[in-house]
Length: 260
Image 1 (cartoon, rainbow, N blue to C red):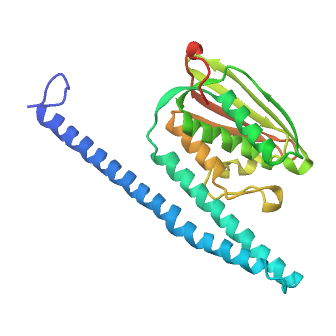
Image 2: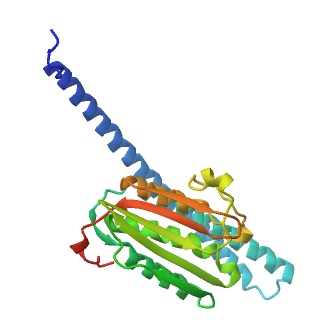
Image 3: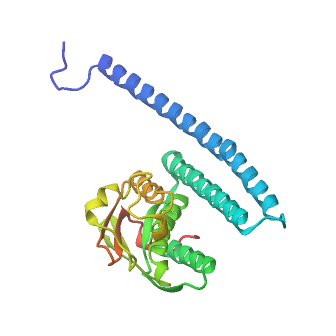
C-alpha cells in the first residue's frame, strides 16, 4: 500500500539506491575509458609525429636540397606541428572532462598576469597594453581555472597580434556568491550571427591567416566553467574586438591570493 505521506517506500528507496549505484559505476567506467583514450592519444599519436619531425630535420640538413625541396619540407614540418597542437587540444578537453576537482580560493587576476607575461615573453616584439583588476577571487580547481584563463587570453592574443599591439582588459565584480569577470580585447572580433559555433569543438570563425588554431581552446574553457557550475558568454562585432563574460562561484574576500 502506498505511503500516504508520499515518501518512498523501503522497496522504492532500494530501487533508487540501486539506480544511483549503477549510474556511478557507469560514470566510473566512462572516466576509465576516457583515461585510456587520452593515454593512447598522448603516446600512440605523438610517436609518429616525433618521427616525422626527426626525419624532416635530417633531410633539411642535406646541403644538396634546392629551395623548392626545402619549402616542401617546411610544409611537412608545419603540418606535423598543427597535428601536434590538435593532439594537445584533445588532451586538454579530455582532462577538462575527467579531472577530479580540488576546490580552493583562486586569484584569477594573478593567473591572468602570469599568462600575459608568458605570451609577451614568447613574442617580445608585440606591444602589450594590459589592465588586470585585483581581487578576482573565484572558488574552484586552480589547475583547471589556470587553463580556462589561458584559453581566453590566448584567444585575445592571437586575434589581436596581427596589428602588432594587443590590448586586453580583465575586470570583474562580485555579485552575492558569484564572480562576474570580463576579458575584453581590441582584436578582429567576429560576427555574432555565428556565436553559436564559438564554443563548439573544431569550429572556427576565422581562417589560419587570422590566427585560428585547432578550434578546441574555447570548448575547453566552456567545459571547465560548466564543471564549476559557471558559464561563458561572448559579445563582439567584426573589427571591434570581443568581450568574454565569465561567471564562476566567488571565493571569500579574506581568502587572499592563491599561490598561483
